[in-house]
Image (cartoon, rainbow, N blue to C red):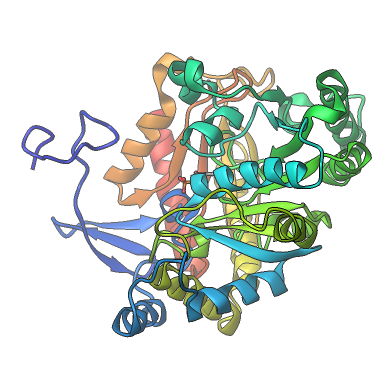
Length: 443
Ligand code: PLP
């Protein structure tokens, strides 16, 4: 089938992608029988690979029992159980779970919840959101407004609410040589203090960031102490802290939540992607008790909602994913194979003059490509290096997640790798070999 004969409006309107017909563990098979190693879980989604029998069985069982009941009238068993599981695993006081159908919806709900919270507690002047330039929070209008991906925002700018964007925490490019990592982390966090003061603390509702940055910059972890200081600044000014863990959460970094490693708990946390592992569309907002209680004891109703929130089949999938991760000890495998992946990337790209940085946590890693390693100069965006790498990788039967370097003008093309949690050493070897060949061919 060509792009001309298909009636599907694909996101790339000029291309007809191959048709995926079968999942086989870490592999996707297309209609021509070609096998692709899924080295990025799509976009860090398919954490259990593509054919896990326990998840598929759980969805079928739920469909046999009851496929749908509107949450305005009913709760359902998998939703109740999944909420309990997430609340028990979550850090701090994140004790309530609001289910939605994906990452952007989770971000929209979190932003509106922050706003409503302040109305409920009698501080209606708080409505502003502060975010970071290096971030992606989704494609719906609210999530797009707070996101830092200027290219995605550009043409919709007149339709977007205002949001303030501060600098990211990005040691590779922003740390000065006379600073330690910790000193840099403090400096980067202090931008938030300045932004809150400039906006007027009594007008700021929330600060949102990805603890480990995903799509826009490629697996960028925070400097040590950065998130702790962000937490302190938010507390000092009564600003809610939202962690967007849609990409980095749900075990991807080797901890259940990425922020666990930094010992910091937010007031609201968004999760999606790995929550349903691609078996069903599902996302959630994990909510601090104090926010829930303010709404329960105030107006009693969160002014938001979607038709498919808490969908039984999606929650059954999410619950089964969590059970498999627990029963098969998969976080341990993420840490073991994550270390193997880092070693393999360092061995393959460590001496490559065009690879400036190799970074990440767990099975959430990236390489950043530069024209000049000593100056960190980026490649000319017109070259579309990331798109060429994607094509070269697919030709070799490998899926990775490359992105361009023009998002905030301050980082290069990068390739994100985020394979399923079930990978073994042979998958890591195949992934890095094929990626190495694809990068060589693209350069
Ligand atoms: N937040 C982050 C950190 C993401 O990486 C993404 C998607 O890549 C989203 C939100 C949006 O999620 P979705 O595409 O499920 O709407």
